[in-house]
Structures are given as C-alpha cells and as structure tokens.
Image (cartoon, rainbow, N blue to C red):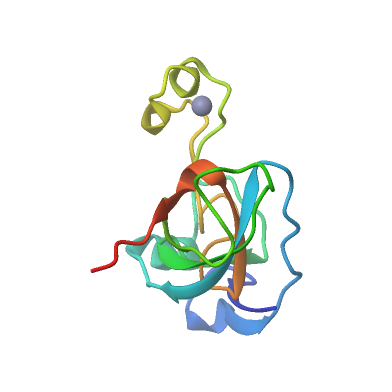
Length: 138
Ligand SMILES: [Zn+2]
C-alpha cells in the first residue's frame, strides 16, 4: 500500500512517499481504508527527532484521520464493513486499571498513532474497535 513515512530524523529529506506492507488485522481490530488525514504538529516533531517517544523506523506518519471500515470481526455489533468512521488516535492497552474501569484516556500505557506505531497517512490502517467512532452524517 502507499503511505507517507519517515526513514530517519531531520528535515523533509527523511519523509518518503512509497510502498509499505499492508497491515494485518487481528481479532478485535478493524481494518480501515483511509479517506482523509491531516498533518499534525506531532508529525513534525516525529520528523525532527521523535526524542522521548519509543518508536521504530520506518514509521508511517499521521495522527488524525477518517475512513471506511474494510474488515471487522463478524460478531462485532456496532461496526460494519462500509461504515464511515473517525479515528481516535490513542492506542490503549485494554488491561490496566483505568482501561478496565472505562477510563481509557488515563491508560498507563497509552500510545498514539503516528508516534509509537504506524499512523494515518496511508491507504489502510488497523485500529482497535474502540478507536473507531461513527462518522456524523452532517
Ligand atoms: Zn490501559
């Protein structure tokens, strides 16, 4: 798939547009075909240095985005293929005390798309089901 990714840190010379492996969806995850993404200040930070953020290169850029669900677990009730969704960029663990008590925004292992793991500036991305919100009709 095509993606915008970092192959180092520095100026725009480390930003590449090219092919990256197609993400493989696991149970409990949603494969989203991206339709829109933005350039976030975080993308520039990660391009510049990414200091203090545990990550690996190459890294697909992009924190924010929206798209259409391609694949989801068959038993999933709220999300269906073809549904338009807006993505929440926080990748939570689902296991810590805060996640277990319905407060994932306080997750002790919170990661962010485009920082700790591949982001939204790609044709496809995998997300946990909890990261997908129905796209408002308006
Ligand atoms: Zn957690």
